[in-house]
Length: 177
Image 1 (tube, one colour):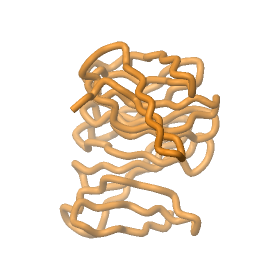
Image 2 (tube, helix red, strand yellow):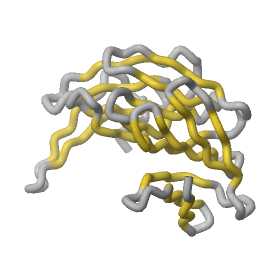
Image 3 (cartoon, rainbow, N blue to C red):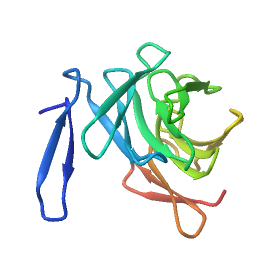
């Protein structure tokens, strides 16, 4: 298994791979950024990466050691990501400035994140059976899920304005904020 590449596939099925600067970095998630580039988490490299459609890559190391970033999203102005091993939510500007926000429960294991609007994101805490909300100022609110041990992983804002959460129990939850 190659863990040191970002791939692009065209609508015709043509695949191009871009080799990352370091081996074993384990890219985990990728999203389109507000600057026209793609931004991705490097779980084992403890970094956020940026790649242009031409393959130019820049790596931004995280300030917290061994944070293990996983999910990433764009709010239209900045990129937000979760640090599963550090129990934090991070934000990176398109110029590379990083801000980290510790969760009240550092063992919550945030896994996925989705932007509702600029400076307004929702995230999963699979280690704590909760979803959380964070604002641009770092204000955090957490909400327990009604099913015990549901282990929320994926999260998305639906066209109906509700949050949709993929649960490790094989179910999907709809949460009205």
